Image 1 (cartoon, rainbow, N blue to C red):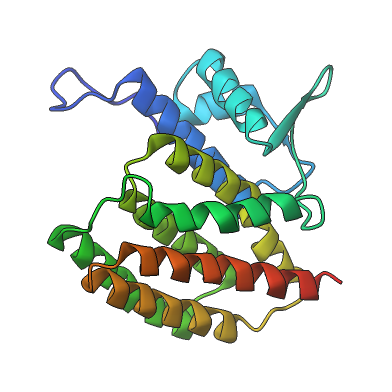
Image 2: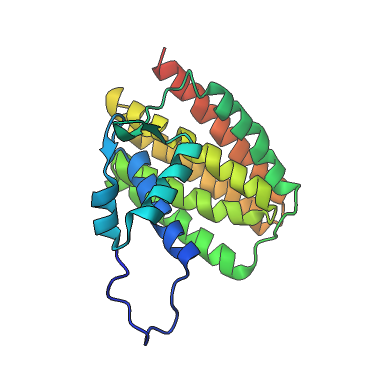
Length: 230
């Protein structure tokens, strides 16, 4: 994932903002997938070499991740991946539950046919995750579904806040799934059923119903995680 080989002949050159977004999204995903586990030190030099950039933009990306609570900078030590704990982030989960309902009310974006084709594809793929997926596969898939459903509102502050809170809590499910050996088949079946319910609501043009289903999904997921972490 580098821009070193780009040439002036590329039809569309990524902007600085685009490059920062790619680096931020990739590092954030690695943290949420526990590829960068809690306590790991992130090397600016190594990341700069991997992404084919200088350390300055990497430093800016890490600063953004620190603002999001995913890493913490320690003087004389470097940037360390933070840990995630359901007790500490319980308030974040509760806020996510309440904000999700607003997607159907604040600047809603009714799905067009192109959106529905994408969502239909996600529903079909969720059935395959049941059969062949791992906790990491399911986490990646959940991230993709979240980003697609976020398009149902054009309210930028709401989208930014929901995205920030989502990724703050995303690691908790994967950690619990691995450590407590959650019944992955059951978790994915529940998720698949919820996607089908959202699909039906969207096909009916009822964004409020779709938002309520998402809210219920987060609430029940939160309850299951709390039970596993007692």
